Image (cartoon, rainbow, N blue to C red; front, side, top):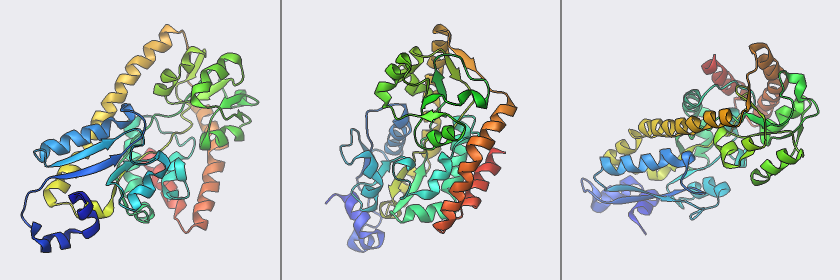
Length: 336
């Protein structure tokens, strides 16, 4: 058993009694990720770099990509049993396991940018109900992975008001799909890799992705318009640590980890800035019409496609004994 496993299983008190007090030792944490290194994981990469530097290489994070340690939808389960010490997951993968976090995935909240998303995530993650929710899985929220809003790229006449989406077939999943359905759109399940062809052939009129995904899946090359500020929603994907392993960390290691979070997030935001540096020139090059909705139409979207789902979410949370309205009010107060 590695020392990191001993830390998680035995706890600090046992280790101290075994003679570890005051001793410097090497410690490695395993981190469960999926896919390849990309903008979405750059903050974890930076975190590993900073922690190693601050501890002279004594405390290291072993980043395991490609679902080497666990399937992406099972990372929270792995954290709960101490199969690894840190992991990234998305709340929408298993809303029943982390219902409090889904407040951040509600549609049409009006989040304008990634910095605001980071601020919201911090506030929600620190709420006692959220901490209690994740503690059921022996998980402690460490930092967010703020994702851009899933705006639409589409083909044909560009929408300028809510009613223009009536009858429009759109590739929109989860909460965004439900929200678009409330205003008369027709959500359609299309895999990411099939979306370019679906728009190009007319199977769907528009698709919602974050800008980096529109570039990756080339949907921007199939469309002729993009919604700059509809901001219908996004997914929330935190990085968590096993609580026992965290609590058992020597003080200097815990300080190295905690003090590196903000710098890691700043690095993540800077990485996404580079995505936008490519995104806007691509729009210009392809002569994509950039559709910016006026405030009255954004308010209409929120009222018709957002609020009904917010209200239903609060009722659902109340049924689970979760202060849904309090969490929703927290989010809205931060945005206002």
